[in-house]
Length: 486
Image (tube, rainbow, N blue to C red):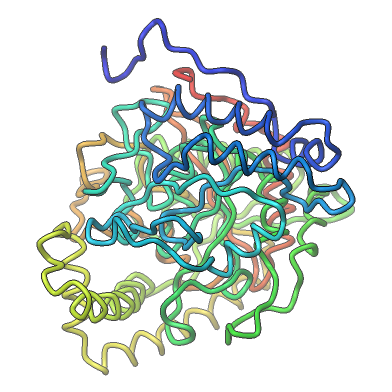
């Protein structure tokens, strides 16, 4: 068969849900049984996953059904917000009894003895874990492939990349193999695959969700966040994932339930004026023309809704250099761990990852101090910028989904790029600010490929940002266009 098409015999049973919010309500009430849902999801995984390779480390169906039966015996009064919902955390998140491979062959048989804090929160809410979602090796790179499980394919065109590093999660959502998914984001790992797969990826403010293993304070770039087919479903998952943790020095005080207020979309009218900044190229980055067209349409939509739209680039001078340095600092820590545990780790690792770890090893203390000073200045400048605006609109990825065989984009609009990270600068530079950011479906190219818009909120303005994103989504409904293949 052609890679772009499926066989005529292909069919997948219809999912039992249209949206996760309604599904979770029905599960709590007992209107749908966990056993029924689990059976439906496994049949869909069996039909779809061989074509897209999004879910890995899949639990045996018989064992999953046993867990579902146990969930059905839980009294309705004791059921949590995710009761009986099958989930597959990203393959960087520890789940007791499952391997956490991180896409790295020497870790393939590492069985976890304990849940990570994020996993614990999801489990306490009633979720049932059935596996992991695929990711690139160590989460490095925005094209999901590794030597353990292979490549994840874009459901809108299986010859294209699903993005990354949360590519498996985005594809599982787009094809409705899962109702909800978590992801993580350093330089766009939530936002990029959401853009490529027509789903939502929310990168919250640093400290909103339990911190990832690694650096706790200095130079933190990465955070976990919710992914879903809609903003409303992302808000539901955020209400479970978020909340303070005293072990995190940067933790923020608001509870998870606080974010449920965002289900009421932001009114965009004269009673509540909204001012949107638009930066199509973020100060001169090369952007594919098809992406620019969709950002232009999004700006027009906000104007149509009643917002004041002004084109103004944010002050992000030296942000990419800062990101590259602080990213390399974190990967220096990864390199030190690998040197101790897998001395021959380079034999199993892709060249771009080796380059990034080696960059970390080559850093001088002066480089690290300069990056921290730069990041401090950028935050001061961007905070002043957001005194004028409620949100910033820009691309969530600089290109539409590209050919799966291409590891990374080396040229955009005739501009040559130096490293495997540069094509994601539009996300990396926002990461440096620490501000909340969300990728929301923004439309499609002439070839039918998804393109997301990125919205950035004020400092610690997660709730207001979700409300604005919810309002945009309600007006456009791009998320309702599902992959024709499935």
